[in-house]
Amino acid sequence: QCCVCGERGAAITCAESGCARSFHLPCAKDGQCITQFFGQHRSFCFEHRLRQTTVTAPAKGTTCAICQEAVGNIASYHTLACPVCKHAWFHRGCIQQQALNDGMACFRCPVCQDNALFRMEMSIIGIQIPDRTPAREDNRAYAPLLQRHRRCDAIMCFYHGGRELAEEEG
Image (cartoon, rainbow, N blue to C red; front, side, top):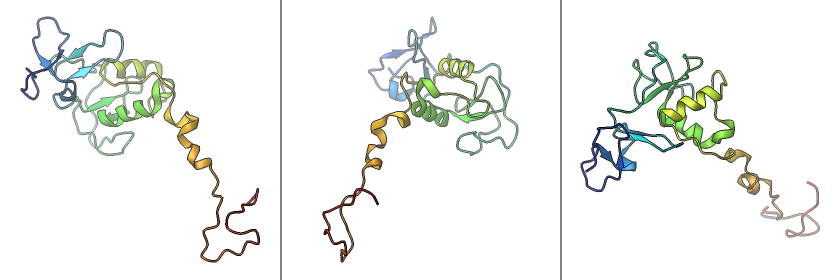
């Protein structure tokens, strides 16, 4: 039975020895459970999830380095800090989206630009970092933007070659 929604069929169990909690993967976020997407792919319930230990509560008025919205005044499941510079704070959802966009090759702290320690810490606390190049570097991603428009769409076309004849340049 899922410890988050109470429904049957929960297939993921907490990796903490002696803990009998189980949850559905889609329920993990709502229940503040984490999954480590490397090594043994361990998952932890809300009580046993790994927490950032090297950070203190954010100062009053601290904003997310990504979305610039307030992060609150306590360190929690939803607020994460860079383990290197310690003053860069993020919403879990914002840093997760950045990791999905950047991939393993480019994911780093947006403030101090550290990649090794930052990536390791984020992986441990449940941020999924795909092992691929960033989507922006995929040549097919922007192919439609590179296609030239080859037909005159003016109400009255004055080009002597007609609407369907495109110049090589211009």
